Length: 445
Image 1 (cartoon, helix red, strand yellow):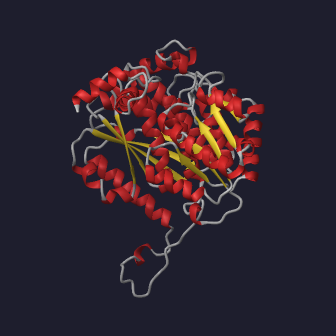
Image 2: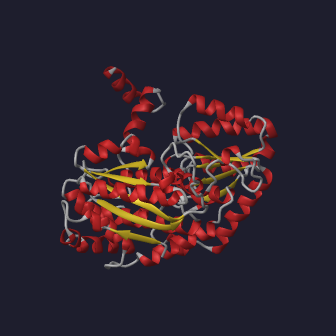
């Protein structure tokens, strides 16, 4: 495997190895629930064996559809929210050139995202940008009625049809939706859109290794087969309970820290390309564990940038936190710091060193300082930012999340709290069928 996990710097502050090992029976039970479908939320376990069960014909279909969109479109807009966009965004950002939006790279088809917010200026500016572009749409929604993506799709569908005509526009729209039910499935059938299925047993935040994530990633020009291969390796490595199961060890350690009063986990990276991987991770763990007034609060920082903003709080603030640091062992490029004769900036002491060496020392120095300051640290190392390593990392976090949620004693696969804001929003907008709720909420205003 291309991933390593070290928990040594999480021990000796508020927990020791015995505290972690004491959770091994609960973790083994959790793995049994995941493998056998015997735990809460067992109707949403399709992701557990998904990497090994993805058919060659489905992968070929995704690749062929991606190739057609690359051929016919200057740009493709992926419409979705939550797990329907964060996984693809995380992988694409991690693998892309940092300045891709400013580079005329004919080998890549840009992927833009919509439906992940209700920003009026965002949607206006997106439509203005697309006005003279040959664009396609990947619309991702099980129901087709989720407010944010439904608004975006209504706007962009109308725009595409006005540019091309309805018949031609239908050839540039791919719907990823329910197999049989819902507004989007009905529309896709009526309009003749190419479709892929969101399986009922895979929740959105676990869907990056389904067409939900794989199609946008493939359109962006990245190797989905290598991504899947990495996930397959991690699936095998974490299938059974044991001391060498990294997902199990991560789940046990973070729960031991939680039991000892560490209520906030900060995911730390030292590579700016991992920013959206952290955003995906935050949803995965926040939506899976934040129930029944329980759960570790998932936060994230991008270092060394955030050392100049959040560093003070992490070093000296309330001691309710621990960190999980992701290191990327090997960079794709090499940059050497030059010598300067005047040395006015005082940097000649690092002249001749790689920038990555300086970054690694900033990381190591920070980890030491935070541990000394009472912040337990878990350390994940991945070999490189490539498709295979990201596939391993994604599945590692997914598996650990399922284990961790069961150790915590919640259903990791539902999200009842997400519906509360929707009910209030529908009531405030006077949606048909919400008349009583509208009357009640207006009485509060």
